[in-house]
Every structure is written in structure tokens, then in C-alpha cells.
Amino acid sequence: MQARHLCAFVVAFAAASSAFAVTKIIQIPPDSEQLTPSALPGYAKARVNCVACHSAEYMVYQPPTAPRAYWEAMVKRMKAVFNAPVADDDMPVIIDYLVKTYGAERPK
Ligand code: HEC
Image (cartoon, rainbow, N blue to C red; front, side, top):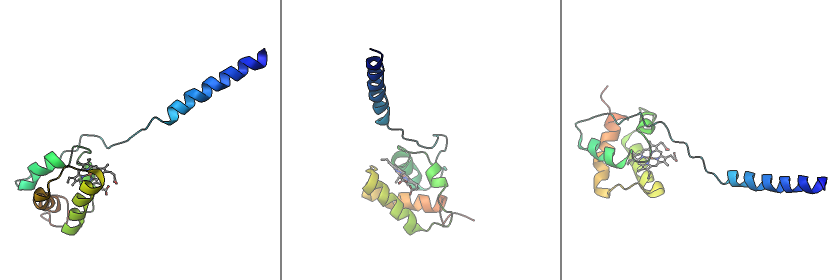
């Protein structure tokens, strides 16, 4: 009788812990970081296209020496890998804004 009780408990526990195992925890940076305002046309486009999934913190933490080609690859990667809804026509202005705001072409 005693042993049977114990057995039932173990089964219930195993079921509960496997339910926890499938829970996915996705961490994203805090939402506080906004894109740096700019008169460049890419600013408005980046606000629509680039901060829907993550904050601008990801831009802030890129190397300040990152050249245009780096940002171009980044925008293309966001689209290809994560399906970021960036129109091909919008890419040049967004890249221009990014490199001039966060990368190698920002004002010294
Ligand atoms: C559909 C969701 C989505 C959109 C829209 C999106 N990103 Fe991302 N981005 C991600 C995810 C997910 C990561 C983190 C995963 C990773 O680093 O591989 C990320 C990471 C980044 C990083 C960090 C560096 C890196 O290599 O991970 C930068 C910079 C970045 N994104 C820039 C942008 C820019 C610029 C745009 C707009 C063109 C953009 N993102 C739009 C999903 C998105």
C-alpha cells in the first residue's frame, strides 16, 4: 500500500516537470531604448521597420566603427533570417540612417 502511494506521486511529479520543460522563455532587452531622432529619411522608416521586435538597444551596442557594408548586411540579415518586413526600396535610406547615427559615418 505504502509503495503504491509513492509510485503515484512520482508519476504526477514527472508529468508536471515535463510540462515546465516545454515552456519557452524568450528574453529581449528592455523597451526603454528609443532610436536616436534624426532628420534623415531613414529615421522614420527605421521606426516602422526596425524596432518592432527589439528596442534600439541592439543598434546602440554595435561597434561605432561599423561601416556601411556592416549595416547593409545587418538589415539584410534581419529580413532574410527573421522576416523583418523591410521593403527592398526602403533599405538604402535605413542603412544610411543607421551608419550615420550608430556607425562609422556618424558626425565626430
Ligand atoms: C521580425 C523581428 C525583427 C525585426 C523587424 C528586426 N529585427 Fe533585428 N533582431 C531580431 C532578433 C530576433 C535579433 C536577435 C537574434 C540575433 O542576434 O541573432 C535581432 C538582433 C539585431 C541586432 C543585434 C546584432 C545581431 O547581430 O544580433 C541588430 C543591430 C539589429 N537586430 C538591427 C535591426 C535593424 C536595423 C532592423 C530594421 C531593418 C531590425 N533589426 C529589425 C529580430 C528583428
